[in-house]
Amino acid sequence: MSHTSVLHPETEAILQEASRISKKGIQTYADPKLTAHASVRLAKHAEPLHYIRYRPDQQDVRDYLIAHECGHIIRVFSTAPEQRKIATIPSNFRKFLYDNSDIRQYMLPDSLMAELESAMASAYKHYDSIIGLLTDGPADVHIEQWIHDSYSTLREIQKRTLPQQAALTYVSLVNRLHQATRKMHRTEATLVYALSRKLGRIIENLEIAEHFRELADEQNAEYMQRALAEVGDRGHIGDVDTTNRWARYLGLENWFEWSEWKSGN
Ligand SMILES: [Zn+2]
Image (tube, rainbow, N blue to C red; front, side, top):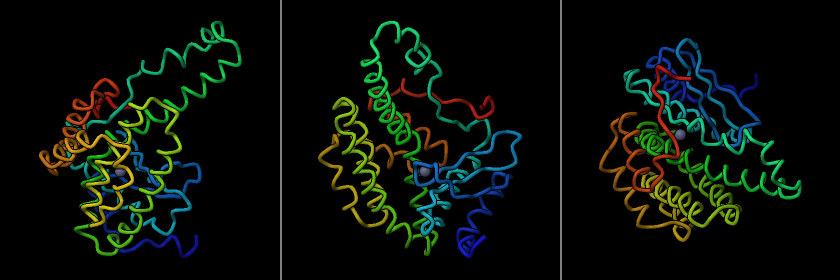
């Protein structure tokens, strides 16, 4: 391992805290296959380790990314097991088209099959993105606030990383403009806009939300920010509550479901 394997003391402290609260070990590593900047896989029942991955090209902001993912571990595991919920995609949601390629092949010529596959892949990309924003967004905001308020070194990395992430999100959104209905695209943009307004306020840089304004529904975004403020930071339970309010307001209640931690996969 090179010198880059040394984490900042603030990050080490957060890792220890997450480990203490969850009573599990945490393994962090760079993963070139990752599309997000970073992600965490929470240890299930008998598993000894959580896994935090980050993209190798994010090495220089790794401390901050790891701290953020630890925030998810801390929020979920500070909550009693019976009150922990994991957002999951309904098992039958993708089933029809995915499981019935023989039906599709029967119905469609190869040329249209290929078009359908790529159209569905685009729609699913929007879908995944919307569900991610909806179910992780509230926790993300509170985690960023926590990093900002408690860790001065990480705060500096946060200050430059969030604008970069917002710029990348904008490029990705604009590139996918014509790959879904206007409504679908607007919903994704509205979630991004509301979240980046909140994040912008935390790092005192509202500029990061500005490019999303024209793509978003401002009234819906306004509601989402109000719901976040109304619920406040009540840990994982509050995060689930906020997600449910957003989903109800945006008409997305049936797009995902919560499973209980204990019955967990
Ligand atoms: Zn997150």
